Image (cartoon, rainbow, N blue to C red):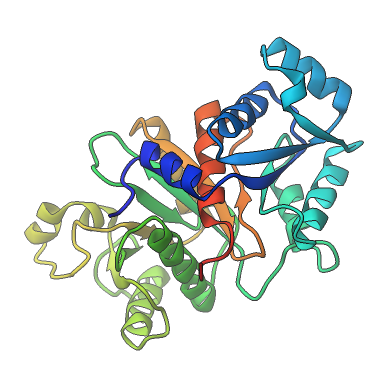
Length: 304
């Protein structure tokens, strides 16, 4: 059965946990609260990398028992990121989470050839959204890592997103490759890429899901809209995964789902040796908590 709510996602993660999670630059009360909640739920065993004195004060202010927090000293955020990635590379932790550090700094650490967690796949961001009234989880990629992907990078983005969807129990996930129009138009490069990606999936170059495009956003999530436009597609109105043309479109769509759609989000970067939990520094405790759960659910690789 597919996971359709974040409550189910947490339960599934608890069934696989607890996994070892290193939190790089854990320096906010929200991060500590999320860590405490996931540890209480037996989802994760967390190691906080940061200033012990500062973390102790934050725990006290948040009313959390300091002796429940495992802390490893790290003098600054950059060192915390490097240490967390070294631990992941050595197999000492199963998931790495971004704390109060810039995403660019965090990802540079992940991609470091000597100490990072780079593997054979492209690192890509997958946002999993729970939108009120939608009835299922919705995946969006890539709104956080690859700035302007080419055709081959988009194929990798799709494959990573499909594999995340499969781990969420979505059998043969339906993938909509988004563009501004649902017909191929040489003046809109995203439509050409979408058509090529659809054909690549038909030929087995992308596996595990049904890929179609170009599709406009309304066609991907509303069957009625597509029928009015005379579109015939197995993805029409049934998309589980939305693939955006570039990082700007992904960022805008994700923020719209959160702020206009009143949705919640779990964010991970996949493709490396371990999942990377990446949330906004302004993200809520709940978002951090469910993102940890998603990272735990994905830990161990897609082949398990």
